[in-house]
Image (cartoon, rainbow, N blue to C red; front, side):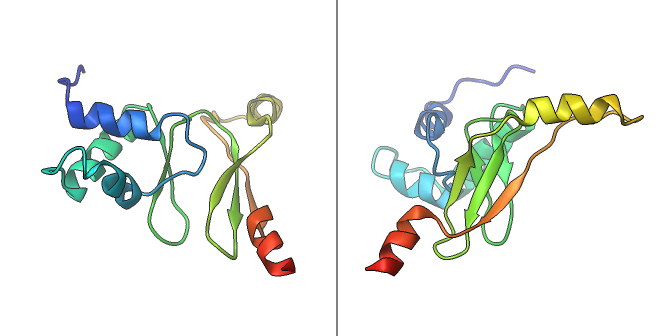
Length: 128
């Protein structure tokens, strides 16, 4: 189903594209509010949810508000216990998915790994 073009949706997509900090809808809203004064948080959520449903982006939910990832392909994330940042991890979940699928009778549609700890920025702050 084709979605009608929207300047606000395109702006949200562009703000999200290429980012690795996995912003919340609120973060994106605050970053776009000046350019689109009539933009509401509900509009940002609605458009992000539509993009998730269409498989264009991914939603990352843990504790706290959902974060959004421009990359919907299977990959791992690191969650910092100190500052709450979410970072992409270098991995190859696609290979793991293929390997596991060979020995699993059902159909696996995606996979992800999650790592938890303290990010390098928090480690630096702690040592100062």
